[in-house]
Image (cartoon, rainbow, N blue to C red; front, side, top):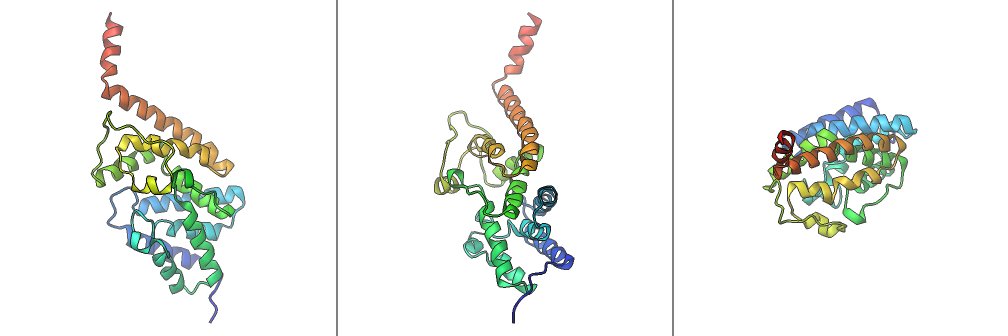
Length: 229
């Protein structure tokens, strides 16, 4: 029996419920609300860029369920995403399309790929936008804390230009993550819509890092003493 290629509102709502179940106990910054933000951002981008909204929404809702950091045992074959889509009787071609989008979303250093479809670009941009700005900062520290990473250690320098294998196996400080990934994202956006939003979010993030380092070095004390003099 052939499956359907029609994505009904009921399927999208079921995907939301499924994602909420998968991520209800996540405290690493990849919780259900991250998925929901990516869903909403991707949908907004899709509307502005003329992508297939239903495909973008489903891929966004399932984009992290088999993430290598969160579910390494299901990552290779996208077992969770595929199982959900089969349970909703989706067709093989549609399942493959959604899995292809999910496979291309993640940042993998210099081996990161540009998605092969506009829908994939929308989802990838949305995921990366949620890694920038104030929420991106909060998620970075949440992830670092959940993985026992130091906030900052001046003796540990960030590694620049890592490929996929090195990036996925590398463990550094929370602050180094800004230099090793986050400050690359603005220039890796695919759509004009995401590029405009990323500029503002990156400026906020870079200002935060600058203030963080000034406080770490007590530069604000030096500035105060200079003002008094």
